[in-house]
Length: 248
Image (cartoon, rainbow, N blue to C red; front, side, top):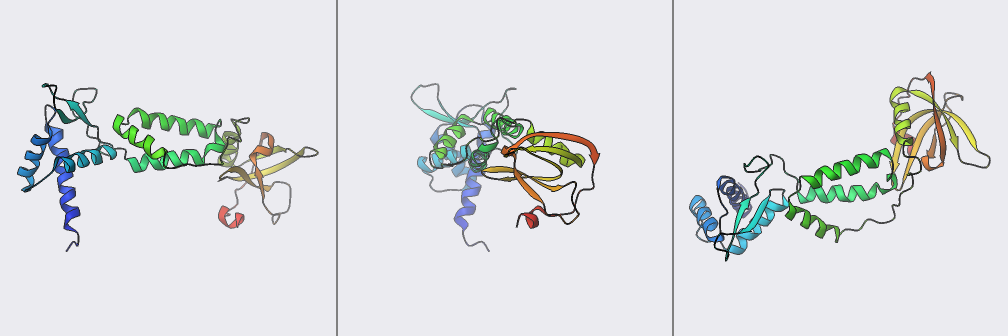
Protein backbone atom coordinates (compact mmCIF):
# COMPACT_ATOMS: atom_id res chain seq x y z
CA UNK A 1 0.00 0.00 0.00
CA UNK A 2 1.53 3.39 -0.94
CA UNK A 3 2.53 5.49 2.05
CA UNK A 4 2.07 8.89 0.42
CA UNK A 5 -1.30 9.13 -1.33
CA UNK A 6 -0.87 12.89 -1.77
CA UNK A 7 1.84 12.26 -4.36
CA UNK A 8 -0.51 9.95 -6.27
CA UNK A 9 -3.27 12.54 -6.22
CA UNK A 10 -0.81 15.16 -7.46
CA UNK A 11 0.19 12.90 -10.37
CA UNK A 12 -3.45 12.30 -11.32
CA UNK A 13 -4.20 16.02 -11.13
CA UNK A 14 -1.29 17.05 -13.34
CA UNK A 15 -1.88 14.25 -15.85
CA UNK A 16 -5.57 15.16 -16.05
CA UNK A 17 -4.65 18.83 -16.50
CA UNK A 18 -2.49 17.84 -19.47
CA UNK A 19 -5.34 15.81 -20.97
CA UNK A 20 -7.78 18.71 -20.63
CA UNK A 21 -5.36 21.19 -22.21
CA UNK A 22 -4.62 18.78 -25.06
CA UNK A 23 -8.29 18.63 -26.10
CA UNK A 24 -9.20 22.27 -25.53
CA UNK A 25 -9.88 24.30 -28.69
CA UNK A 26 -9.22 27.65 -27.02
CA UNK A 27 -7.43 28.98 -23.93
CA UNK A 28 -9.09 28.10 -20.63
CA UNK A 29 -9.17 30.53 -17.71
CA UNK A 30 -8.38 29.48 -14.14
CA UNK A 31 -11.98 28.87 -13.09
CA UNK A 32 -12.80 26.79 -16.18
CA UNK A 33 -9.76 24.59 -15.63
CA UNK A 34 -10.41 24.29 -11.90
CA UNK A 35 -14.05 23.33 -12.58
CA UNK A 36 -13.01 20.64 -15.08
CA UNK A 37 -10.40 19.19 -12.73
CA UNK A 38 -12.85 19.11 -9.82
CA UNK A 39 -15.44 17.32 -11.95
CA UNK A 40 -13.00 14.79 -13.40
CA UNK A 41 -11.29 13.95 -10.11
CA UNK A 42 -14.02 14.62 -7.56
CA UNK A 43 -11.95 17.30 -5.83
CA UNK A 44 -13.66 19.47 -3.24
CA UNK A 45 -11.15 22.30 -3.46
CA UNK A 46 -8.40 23.46 -5.79
CA UNK A 47 -6.86 26.91 -5.61
CA UNK A 48 -5.71 29.07 -8.55
CA UNK A 49 -2.28 29.07 -6.92
CA UNK A 50 -2.08 25.26 -7.10
CA UNK A 51 -3.28 25.36 -10.71
CA UNK A 52 -0.54 27.82 -11.66
CA UNK A 53 2.03 25.67 -9.88
CA UNK A 54 0.85 22.61 -11.81
CA UNK A 55 1.05 24.51 -15.12
CA UNK A 56 4.55 25.71 -14.22
CA UNK A 57 5.54 22.11 -13.47
CA UNK A 58 4.29 20.97 -16.90
CA UNK A 59 6.34 23.76 -18.48
CA UNK A 60 9.47 22.65 -16.59
CA UNK A 61 8.89 19.13 -17.95
CA UNK A 62 8.98 20.40 -21.51
CA UNK A 63 5.28 20.79 -22.33
CA UNK A 64 4.57 24.03 -24.17
CA UNK A 65 1.92 25.45 -21.81
CA UNK A 66 1.24 29.11 -22.60
CA UNK A 67 -0.57 31.72 -20.51
CA UNK A 68 -2.23 34.02 -23.08
CA UNK A 69 -4.75 36.90 -23.00
CA UNK A 70 -8.40 35.96 -23.47
CA UNK A 71 -10.65 37.79 -25.99
CA UNK A 72 -12.12 40.04 -23.27
CA UNK A 73 -8.67 41.54 -22.75
CA UNK A 74 -9.04 41.38 -18.97
CA UNK A 75 -8.20 37.77 -18.17
CA UNK A 76 -5.62 35.17 -19.14
CA UNK A 77 -6.11 31.55 -20.15
CA UNK A 78 -3.99 28.41 -20.32
CA UNK A 79 -3.38 26.46 -23.53
CA UNK A 80 -0.92 24.11 -25.18
CA UNK A 81 1.05 25.87 -27.91
CA UNK A 82 0.12 24.95 -31.48
CA UNK A 83 2.69 23.16 -33.58
CA UNK A 84 3.54 23.90 -37.21
CA UNK A 85 0.62 21.92 -38.62
CA UNK A 86 -2.03 23.36 -36.33
CA UNK A 87 -2.40 20.49 -33.90
CA UNK A 88 -1.54 20.36 -30.24
CA UNK A 89 2.09 19.68 -29.41
CA UNK A 90 2.40 17.06 -26.68
CA UNK A 91 5.90 15.58 -26.94
CA UNK A 92 6.02 11.87 -26.25
CA UNK A 93 9.35 12.39 -24.47
CA UNK A 94 9.60 16.11 -23.72
CA UNK A 95 12.76 17.88 -22.67
CA UNK A 96 12.80 18.53 -18.95
CA UNK A 97 14.51 21.21 -16.91
CA UNK A 98 16.61 18.55 -15.18
CA UNK A 99 17.90 17.15 -18.49
CA UNK A 100 18.70 20.60 -19.87
CA UNK A 101 20.47 21.60 -16.65
CA UNK A 102 22.60 18.44 -16.74
CA UNK A 103 23.50 19.12 -20.39
CA UNK A 104 24.44 22.74 -19.62
CA UNK A 105 26.78 21.60 -16.83
CA UNK A 106 28.36 18.88 -19.01
CA UNK A 107 28.87 21.41 -21.80
CA UNK A 108 30.87 23.64 -19.46
CA UNK A 109 32.89 20.68 -18.17
CA UNK A 110 33.90 19.96 -21.77
CA UNK A 111 34.94 23.57 -22.39
CA UNK A 112 38.59 22.44 -22.89
CA UNK A 113 37.59 20.87 -26.24
CA UNK A 114 36.08 24.13 -27.54
CA UNK A 115 37.13 24.61 -31.14
CA UNK A 116 37.56 20.89 -31.83
CA UNK A 117 35.27 18.47 -33.65
CA UNK A 118 33.76 17.41 -30.30
CA UNK A 119 32.71 21.00 -29.64
CA UNK A 120 31.04 21.10 -33.06
CA UNK A 121 28.89 18.17 -31.93
CA UNK A 122 28.11 19.79 -28.58
CA UNK A 123 27.04 23.08 -30.18
CA UNK A 124 24.94 21.32 -32.81
CA UNK A 125 23.10 19.41 -30.07
CA UNK A 126 22.66 22.61 -28.06
CA UNK A 127 21.11 24.31 -31.09
CA UNK A 128 18.64 21.43 -31.57
CA UNK A 129 17.67 21.51 -27.90
CA UNK A 130 17.13 25.27 -27.90
CA UNK A 131 15.24 25.18 -31.21
CA UNK A 132 12.60 22.82 -29.81
CA UNK A 133 12.54 24.31 -26.32
CA UNK A 134 9.36 26.10 -25.17
CA UNK A 135 10.08 29.75 -24.32
CA UNK A 136 9.10 29.42 -20.66
CA UNK A 137 11.34 26.38 -20.24
CA UNK A 138 14.20 28.41 -21.73
CA UNK A 139 13.58 31.16 -19.17
CA UNK A 140 13.72 28.64 -16.34
CA UNK A 141 16.97 27.23 -17.69
CA UNK A 142 18.53 30.71 -17.67
CA UNK A 143 17.47 31.03 -14.02
CA UNK A 144 19.15 27.73 -13.18
CA UNK A 145 22.34 28.85 -14.93
CA UNK A 146 22.52 31.70 -12.42
CA UNK A 147 22.56 29.11 -9.64
CA UNK A 148 25.26 26.78 -11.02
CA UNK A 149 28.74 27.98 -11.93
CA UNK A 150 31.37 25.73 -13.51
CA UNK A 151 34.85 27.22 -13.41
CA UNK A 152 38.42 26.51 -14.40
CA UNK A 153 37.88 24.88 -17.79
CA UNK A 154 39.31 27.09 -20.52
CA UNK A 155 39.63 26.09 -24.16
CA UNK A 156 42.96 24.30 -24.69
CA UNK A 157 42.76 22.42 -27.97
CA UNK A 158 41.28 24.86 -30.50
CA UNK A 159 44.65 25.19 -32.25
CA UNK A 160 44.35 21.55 -33.35
CA UNK A 161 40.68 21.24 -34.35
CA UNK A 162 40.99 17.94 -36.26
CA UNK A 163 43.44 16.16 -33.96
CA UNK A 164 40.75 14.31 -31.99
CA UNK A 165 39.16 13.15 -35.24
CA UNK A 166 42.51 11.85 -36.54
CA UNK A 167 43.29 9.99 -33.32
CA UNK A 168 39.77 8.54 -33.25
CA UNK A 169 40.20 7.15 -36.76
CA UNK A 170 43.56 5.63 -35.81
CA UNK A 171 42.07 3.88 -32.76
CA UNK A 172 39.01 2.63 -34.66
CA UNK A 173 41.07 1.26 -37.56
CA UNK A 174 43.94 0.03 -35.32
CA UNK A 175 46.49 1.97 -37.37
CA UNK A 176 49.91 2.88 -36.11
CA UNK A 177 50.67 6.57 -35.82
CA UNK A 178 53.78 8.66 -35.92
CA UNK A 179 53.49 11.43 -33.33
CA UNK A 180 55.49 14.62 -32.88
CA UNK A 181 55.47 15.78 -29.25
CA UNK A 182 56.54 19.20 -28.01
CA UNK A 183 59.75 19.08 -26.07
CA UNK A 184 63.34 20.22 -25.99
CA UNK A 185 64.16 18.86 -28.50
CA UNK A 186 61.01 17.80 -30.38
CA UNK A 187 60.18 14.14 -29.62
CA UNK A 188 58.99 11.75 -32.31
CA UNK A 189 57.32 8.47 -31.36
CA UNK A 190 55.66 5.58 -33.18
CA UNK A 191 52.61 4.45 -31.22
CA UNK A 192 49.67 2.06 -31.07
CA UNK A 193 46.81 4.38 -29.99
CA UNK A 194 44.49 2.82 -27.41
CA UNK A 195 42.01 5.43 -26.13
CA UNK A 196 41.34 9.15 -26.00
CA UNK A 197 41.05 9.91 -22.30
CA UNK A 198 38.87 12.85 -21.27
CA UNK A 199 39.69 13.87 -17.73
CA UNK A 200 38.68 17.51 -17.25
CA UNK A 201 40.44 19.74 -17.76
CA UNK A 202 42.67 17.67 -20.07
CA UNK A 203 42.24 15.39 -23.07
CA UNK A 204 45.01 12.82 -23.46
CA UNK A 205 46.10 10.04 -25.76
CA UNK A 206 46.57 6.67 -24.09
CA UNK A 207 48.87 4.53 -26.23
CA UNK A 208 51.52 1.81 -26.29
CA UNK A 209 54.94 2.12 -27.95
CA UNK A 210 54.88 0.43 -31.34
CA UNK A 211 58.58 -0.40 -31.47
CA UNK A 212 59.22 -1.65 -27.95
CA UNK A 213 58.85 -4.97 -26.10
CA UNK A 214 55.36 -6.31 -25.37
CA UNK A 215 55.64 -5.50 -21.66
CA UNK A 216 56.72 -1.91 -22.19
CA UNK A 217 54.40 0.39 -20.21
CA UNK A 218 51.81 2.62 -21.80
CA UNK A 219 52.18 6.34 -22.33
CA UNK A 220 49.67 9.11 -21.58
CA UNK A 221 50.15 12.29 -23.59
CA UNK A 222 48.18 15.51 -23.21
CA UNK A 223 47.13 16.19 -26.81
CA UNK A 224 47.98 19.85 -26.29
CA UNK A 225 51.61 18.68 -26.55
CA UNK A 226 51.07 16.86 -29.85
CA UNK A 227 52.48 18.96 -32.69
CA UNK A 228 51.38 16.58 -35.44
CA UNK A 229 50.08 13.08 -36.19
CA UNK A 230 50.72 10.94 -39.25
CA UNK A 231 48.49 7.93 -39.92
CA UNK A 232 50.67 5.04 -41.11
CA UNK A 233 49.64 2.23 -43.44
CA UNK A 234 50.64 -0.44 -40.92
CA UNK A 235 48.01 -1.84 -38.56
CA UNK A 236 48.21 -3.65 -35.22
CA UNK A 237 46.13 -5.93 -33.01
CA UNK A 238 44.55 -3.83 -30.24
CA UNK A 239 45.39 -4.91 -26.69
CA UNK A 240 42.63 -6.13 -24.43
CA UNK A 241 43.49 -3.64 -21.73
CA UNK A 242 41.01 -1.79 -19.53
CA UNK A 243 41.85 1.94 -19.55
CA UNK A 244 40.84 2.23 -15.87
CA UNK A 245 43.36 -0.44 -14.91
CA UNK A 246 46.07 1.29 -16.90
CA UNK A 247 45.32 4.73 -15.52
CA UNK A 248 45.14 3.45 -11.94
